[in-house]
Image 1 (spheres, rainbow, N blue to C red):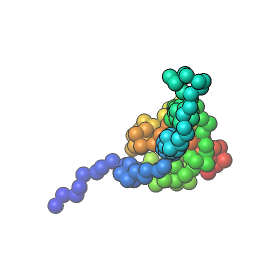
Image 2 (cartoon, rainbow, N blue to C red):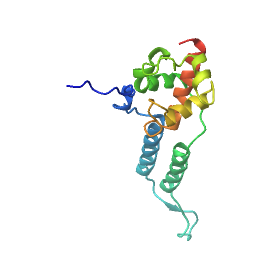
Image 3 (cartoon, rainbow, N blue to C red):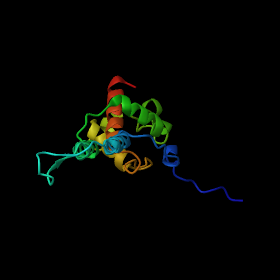
Amino acid sequence: SAPPPPSRPPPCPSARAPVKLLTTEMLAKISALALVGSAAAFTAPTMPLRSGASSMQMSAQGNAVKVAAAGAALLVAAPAFAADSAAGEKIFTANCAACHAGGKNSVVPDHTLEKDAIEKFLTGGFNEKAVATQVTNGKGAMPAFGGRLSDEDIANVAAFVIESSEEGW
């Protein structure tokens, strides 16, 4: 029998078995739902503001729901955030370390996460934005994580990669 034809290096193992973490975005949504639920449970009697003015009533429950809805809108809206390298390390460990443990690259060995390799090979150079773009869109054997991780998680991973590269892994 003939030997099998040569093939490309296998894709990163994390491309086949994504790990779903409880992201900051998910926690914000859960918090908003809990806040709205607790506000809805709050009830207080309504009373007229002045004698004979039954059409204008003050409702503590209505006000609480409005405050909760405003708070939920702030939590769920896409906030500007500073990247968190410590959170990025956890996400990196769960999603990237299969191919990039210790800043290495098990698929394309010279394309490591060392500062000089990032400067040489990464489109956009050595900065968090360029790393985030690579993680989001993938390239070559590296899968895209844009559909699996939130923008905040990707920004956190980028911060971790840049910080670790500057420190020499």
